[in-house]
Image 1: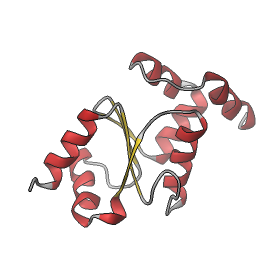
Image 2 (image 1 turned 45 degrees about the horizontal axis):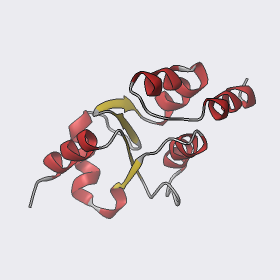
Image 3 (image 1 turned 60 degrees about the vertical axis):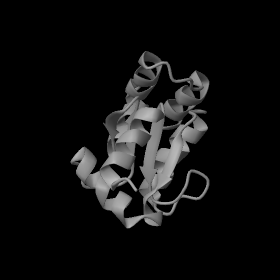
Length: 120
C-alpha cells in the first residue's frame, strides 16, 4: 500500500488535468468544488476528479502536498494551479485558456469566451 503523498504524486503526474474536490465532477459536494468543476465541464476539459471526502488521508495529504490549505485544487500536467478563486480569476482573464493551450490540453474556446461574456 502506498502512502497518500505517493498516491497523489502518481495521480497528478499520470493525468493531464486533475481536480481534487469535495464530491465528484457530476455531483460536487461544496460550492467551491462545484464552481471549478462546472467551469472545466462547461469548457469541455477532460479531467480526473478525486473526491477527497472518500479518503481522509487524501483529504489531508493534498493540502500537505501542495502546501495549500483549501480544496478544490487543480493540477495541470503535474503542476498545482490553484483553488477556486485563482481558477475563477484565470478563467475570466483568459489565463486558464493560455495555460491549457500551452500544455496541449483540449478545451472549447467558444465556451471559455461565453463564460467571460456572461461575467463582463
